[in-house]
Length: 284
Ligand code: SAM
Image (cartoon, rainbow, N blue to C red; front, side, top):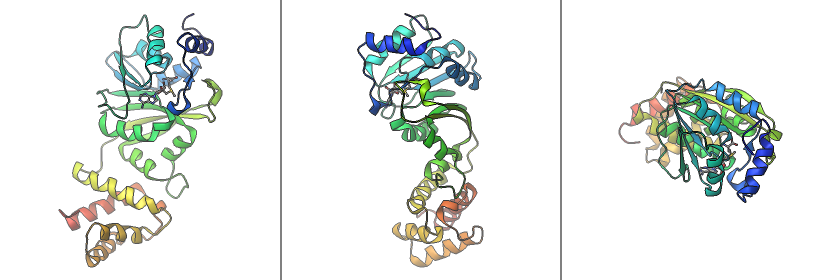
């Protein structure tokens, strides 16, 4: 049996042949709708000069379609048995490098594009790692619908949080596809959505970035409180005197009104970071 329009049948055949029982804990559910696979690849506008990184090659269906258009594909897969099956699928393809390993643990290879149907259990962590470590221009990433909603959320929305801010800090994001769960094998519990991320110019220096991450992490642990209170608490915990913390908060209040943490915009958070940095340099 070979790669053909009926990918579900092919997946069932391969799983049986290689004695693989898909593990939910590793997000092992495979996209078997060829039209959707093709749409994902089209959105990446691939050419032979592109090096594409894929996290979780699985059975290699998406990998194969990427490889037909890109110069090179590097796919990381944590499951040895799946790699055996993937090698059969990619038999006639020469421009795929398969790395056996845990994408969260290894140093990620350089690539100018990322295309991945992410393993659900690590999708948030791996997104942070991709944004921080891989200098991609464009990423086409498929998430569980709920995670996609968190990434795309607007201020004050219940889904708005640290994930939203960190992704939107690095990239502009749009949803390009909605994928019903029955396009996968085995069929997962939830639908998926594919997002296109385009890296943007950073608004903060590397130095300020560390502080920004810390401020966002700390503020969003208390997302329903007034940001002034949460920020003051954070500063005091970081050995800033009460007087100085008050001064910084008042300085911020000139630009940002008192509102709940969950209502802070990206611009608000960037301003808060800059004001803390310039007031405390080099103490925080
Ligand atoms: N690319 C395939 C597709 O589109 O059908 C498979 C996608 S499946 C949702 C996720 C894949 O990621 C699985 O093959 C799983 O074994 C792999 N995986 C899970 N955790 C991983 C990790 N930490 N590092 C690398 N691969 C991982």
